[in-house]
Length: 204
Image (tube, rainbow, N blue to C red; front, side):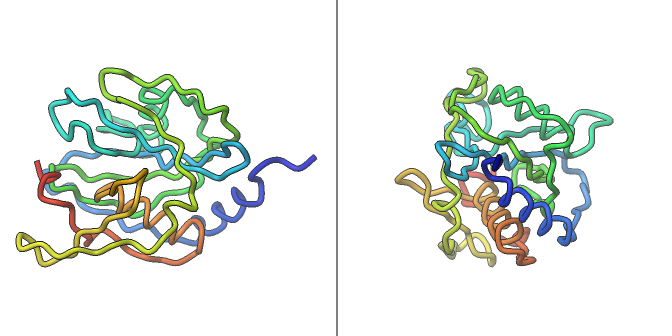
């Protein structure tokens, strides 16, 4: 019996095992983790993207990967899995972790550690944490695995990265993480993204 997505999972695990993620010193920032959760929805490889609740104090209404601040003593994978379950209801064990991507220092004072996890087959029903998450979206990997758009802004010498998402644009840090996921996990390319800029509205 063929397991849906088994070949993709194997390929991603192989690529991530060969990748050497670059850590970033906290230097006064707080550690956080996000989950790049890959699922098979209606036979289509997809990634979970959330929309942050409109009443949140920071980054309200923005697109994001499930994640948040790490608790004392937590590893990056442990925090990513905990946040994934809290925000979407998807409960996975440590065996689902395929690997890590580069740390990404955010303008809002965090060092984000992205963790790629395998969520398996989904029926598309999620238990969104209403206080933090306005919606959980299953986005086909093919929609995200495209050349990014790079913009220049007067406030920074680094380019702002954007990816298309559901009729709009996905910005860094999420766009940077998703782009590196596609490059590393899907194609085996050691593309770095920590230097890519966030739009000014995300600096707070």
